[in-house]
Amino acid sequence: MNMAVMNFIPRCRRMLGDGTILNRVIVFSTIYGLFEGVSIFALLPAITSLVTGQPVLGLGVTGWIVVLACLAVLGGVANYFQLSRGYSVAMFFIRVAHDMIGNRVATLPLGWFNKPLAGKLSRMVSTELMMAGEIIAHFVSPFISNLVVSLVVLVLTYTWDVRLGITLTVATPFFLLFVALSTKLNKKAKDISEPAEVELSNRIVEFAHCQAALRSCGRSANYSELTTANREWLRAKRKELWLNLAGNVVGNSFSQGIVVTLMFMSAQFAVGGTLQPVEAIAFIGLCLRYTQVLTGITDTAAALEDRRPVLDAIDEVVTAKPLPEPDTATPEPTPGTISLDHVAFSYEDGTPVLRDITFAVPAKTMVALVGPSGCGKTTIARLISRFYDVTAGSVKVGGVDVREQTTKQLMASLSMVFQDVYLFDDTLEANIRIGREDATMAEFHEAARLAGVTEIVNRLPRGWDTPVGEGGRALSGGERQRVAIARALLKQAPIVLLDEATSALDPENEENVVAAVDKLRETATILVIAHKLDTIRKADAIVQLRADGTVEDIGTHEELFARGGTYRSFWDHRAAAQGWQL
Image (cartoon, rainbow, N blue to C red):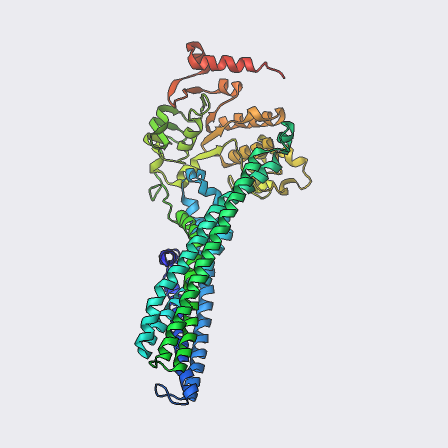
């Protein structure tokens, strides 16, 4: 039951960097538990002295009242420090964890962000991080203090009466077992119902978003996927209800049965004359309070276990290993060049995406990658950017293996313009200036003009101060592409990786993007994933890839066209498709 606590404390110490601040919470929780445990036990002699009028353990009624008052004051002070330190550490933990997640994310390879975990980062640094902080503030301290209380009460009961101590000792594991079993049943109920609830929620959203398509297909009144999800949800909720009922029976009825058994045994001791009636009554009160403490332990442990996935997700990020890199930049003998030498790569073991890829891109030339969908064109661009490390062979930028360059050095050599352009929730100017923040106004406006962004600004009421919205949703896809090109122009990196998307742009946006790419060719090396015939024909060299991730041929348009093969077939089909009309 306490595995979540045992796992969390080392994790927390690692994130805090200094275990001293967490140790204070543990110390104050322990002190508070000691005072609370002694206070609960002190009721036995205090009540006995009150009823009999005789001193017990050397103290009369007044003495025990003073002891209880002192314990109440000391316990209150310890509880105050326990709670205040717990909240302080929780807030400090949230702040430190934010920094650790941010710093770690900034050093992880770009390929890491393709993992499903990357989509959870936003939730992780908001609600889930708050939940992790709650563990310190609301769960760890009570768990430790209740654990200490139970141990203190158990030990002191032995000093009062061995038989009562043995009675509590025997009853404790049974009580914990029943409560733990109840918690497990309730958790199993949640595990059954939650996936069905998520599925039903997804289907409802899908049903609402896809009304146009469903109505056009005549399925708006009978959407079988939603009906099935609703039926499965109802079945899961029935199972959840029965399991919760079983958990409540075990947790409440059986555990209360143990309390009744303790009362019965203390009454038997009193009837048999081996225990004073007043002591039996006091012991019954102690048993009730003791079982409350045990319930608190199991409830807290269950809550900690319930939040363990949050800790696992945070831990997965902060312990993720960045790709190894040197401490200092390596001089580049041939800036602006790209070369792949017998490169092989697999996203998953046993499923190669690229096989024995070898080609070179001289400085200030444009090389086009062409081939069927899934042949590895985008993967090549990602390997050059070191989203991932190659499985075999080497990728060189500027004549130096990317694995021997620092991230800062490699990113300074590259500008990346991909199809899915993401803009920051900031102004147009800020989104372009991120390419090179120290650029002069003249350089900035020239890059914007060449990319066609100036034309966009001239028709916006707020001009350069216009917010683009999250992801750039205030702009069209072509306009976002122009901003990304302007950013690359302003950065003036020696190499530009361009996943051409002009095939999906309107003529005006396409004209601006093509003109900007032509300008980039004057000063930069361009590796373009080409789709348009005009772009392919303009390339200094073309790399034709096969569907299995191998290089079929390399050459100029004229050379590849003359040789026939896949490139000739590809060109003929594209040329024929240009005349199609709807």
